[in-house]
Length: 285
Image (cartoon, rainbow, N blue to C red; front, side, top):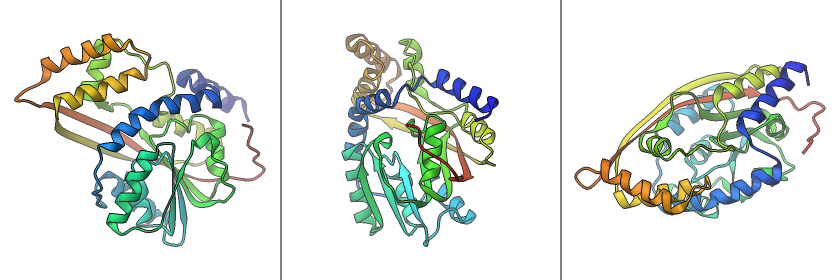
């Protein structure tokens, strides 16, 4: 590892505060309550459209995925990308810690008539699959948080790797304001921003390509659902639950209108792809 890359990796670690493998796995387990709650609210309906479809179409157009290639989706969640990848791949392995999220994927796949998805309930840090895939992918997953995890992705790929993550300017309107008012500052372990990935991969000698997408959604929320969701979310940052609940419910009274809360999600997304290099790699973790 050259000096510039080493320093960039140190800055990444300082900025992200991801910690050791054991600390990261423990943090992921804490997040399961939130992910399981969100998964239980999902229905079985899925259609191959929206931002995930656009990204999958881009990947297919580049030849990174095809009906002759398998794919691995790390941190698959409820399968927004998994299902779109599966429509354009030989088969896809969906990897996630949340049993509820994987159950949503199975139900959606069955309803959509998609039979080429294999689910694996496992933390990425503990994933010991020895086989390789035509394309290794992850979207908005904090587990891909250092040089070693990028190299692990490459080790599993026979061709290309891809990451979808946020760029600057992304926000959820009310969550951003709530966290500002309650002075909630994540201590670490959040998703890596696109520029950091791009810089590290460039210093690794890859030639990463970036495609950008904007996701903007405005929608009405049930006030009680809004409170419950944010209470669980803020509990992940070691905030006093009584103070959090009081602050959230006071804020709800300010923003509720005609019985609903109008919310906005704006994501500046970046898809970063690069050709994997596996030569002489030995996993250090």
